[in-house]
Amino acid sequence: MKNRVLAFAGIVLASLACSPMLQADETRSSRPNVLFVLCDDLRASALGCAGHPDVKTPNIDRLAREGVRFKNAFCATSLCSPSRASILTGLYAHTHGVTNNFTELPNKHPHWAQRLRDEGYTTAYFGKWHMGEENDEPRPGFDFFATHKGQGKYYDTEWNVNGKRVGAIKGYYTNVVTDMALDWLKADHGGKPWVACIGQKAPHSFYFPEEKYAHTFDGVRVPYPATAFHLADKPGWIKERLYTWHGIYGPLFEWRKSFPDDRPEAVKDFENMVHAYWGTILSVDDSMGRIYSWLESTKQLDNTIIVFMGDNGLLEGEHGMVDKRTAHEASIRIPLIVRFPALGRGKIVDRQVLTVDLAPALLELCGAKPLEGIHGKSWVKLVQSGDENWRKGWFYEYNYEKQFPYTPNVRAVRTDDWKYIHYPHGDGSPDRHLAELYDLKNDPGETKNLISDPRYSKTIGELRDDLTRVMAETGLTAKTDVMPIDEGIKKELPDQKIR
Image (cartoon, rainbow, N blue to C red; front, side):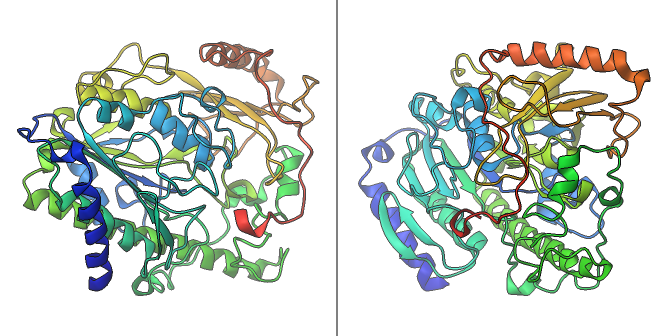
C-alpha cells in the first residue's frame, strides 16, 4: 500500500505544479473549506447514530454529535445519477435532464463546487462520479479530478487521474479513494480555501467488504422484513417484482446463485447479502475517522464544513423488494449529517429536507453567490433558528427504465403526515396500476395501503391537488411531464455491464 500511496502522491504533486491557479501567492482565506463525502445506496437507518443495533459507526456518529443530523432527509429521485445531479445543481431531474443512469450532467447547469471554484476555491473530486457510464474524463468545475468508468470495483479499480489513465490501483476502493483525497489535501493549495469531494463506491452492490470485516456480522440473524409478506393491498407490480432482479426471491445481486427461490430456507442468501452490505459501511466509517484525524491535526476541523450523505436510500426487503427507485420510505430516505460550528452542535432536524437543498445551503455557508433558478432552498436558517416558511410537502419523480424494467413510472407527494403515490402509464391515459396512500404519522412503515378505503377520499383529493401544485412549482405540468411508456415488469436480468 505504501508504494501505491507514494506513486499517487507523485501524480498529485505533478498536477498541482502544472496548475497556475494553485500557485497563487495568497493569504489563507477565512472562508470555510468543504469536505463532501457521498456514499452510494446508503440506507438512512444503517448508521449507529440513526439507531442501528448492529452497524457500529463511531466516526460518523461523532460527526452527528458535533454537528447536525437531518432526521428526515430525502432524495427527489431514488436513482444514483439523477440524485447526484440534483445534489450538485439544486435542480429536480426533469430540469437538469439526468433522468437515468446513463446521462451526462449537461454543462449548462452550474453546480455548487463550480461556483466556489469561480469564487477562488481550489476544488477536487475523487471517486465515483456516475453520470455518464463510459466517461472517465475530468468534469467541469474541478481543478483535480480522479474517477473511473461506471461503478468501479471494490478491489483494484482502473483510474483516470486528471485525464490520464493510470491503470488499476491495487487495494480496496474505500481505502484507495481516501488515500487519494489525503494526498491532495496535504499538498500546497496556495493559501486558497479548498473543496474536496469524495464519491465512495460503498455500499453499492455488488457488496464486498474488506477482509477484516468479512465475518463481522456472521452471528446476526437477518429475516425478511414483515412487510414482504403483507402485499394483499399493494399494487400488482410489487408482487410481480418479487421474482425479478429487484425482488427478494431473485438473484440478490448474485448472492443467490440459483433463483428464483421462495423457499423459507433461502432467506440465508438474503442474510448473507445484508451482512456484506453492512461490512462495506464499516470501511467508510474508518475512512471518515482518518480524514477527521487529519483535519484535527492540521487545525482545520472547525473551519471545514463536513457533509456526509447518501445519494439515495435502499430497499432491504421492505415490501418484498431490493434496490431503490420506488417512492417507499426505505428507498427515498437518505442519511445527511453536517458538521460546522456555525450550525450548532448535537442538533437533530426533524423537518423534511431534500437533495436539492444542499447546493444553496453550502453556498450560503461559504458566503458565495447563489445559483439562480434552482428548486432547492437553503436550510441554514432552519438549522440555526427555525424557519416558519419551510416546506410541508414535496414531490418525488422516477421514470421507467427499459434497462431495469422492474419499477413503473412514479409520481408521488410526501407531506409531513401523508404520502400519495401513483404510477402514470406515460401516454396520458389513465393509470394502470393501483395507487398507494399511507398515513405516515400512524403507519411510518407503510404497512397499510389506504387508497381503496372510502373514508380517505377527501384526503386523496387534497393530496392529488398538492401533487399538482408542488410539481407546478418546479415547472412540471401534465403537458410538460414527459416520461417513457411503462412496458411492464419483466423477468430478464439487466445487462452484465450495467448492473
